[in-house]
Image 1 (cartoon, rainbow, N blue to C red):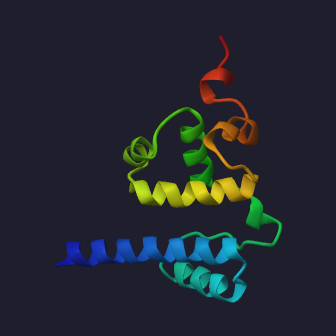
Image 2: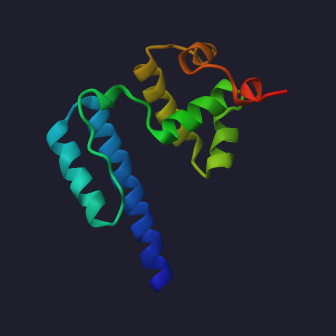
Length: 121
């Protein structure tokens, strides 16, 4: 029974995190703040988003964007990060909006060079 409660709570935390990110990215500050408080109550660490921080990529958005820039498909990214293909798509839409780009090809200029190009030889 405890395993089921943990699984349900993890799913609820995930949905709450998605709600927080949605509210924050769309500028619905009152709901974003409420979701932030609820996440804090679950023990999660949540940074308060300011108007300036709203356009910054989250750690997960950056990781997904870098994998997409390096040529991985949404399903491949999902497998690596234990996310669904649809969650990856959702994050990439936010990345594109924040970076003001329209395609994966533009990720290279928006993010910089790939990890393999940055490694010293």
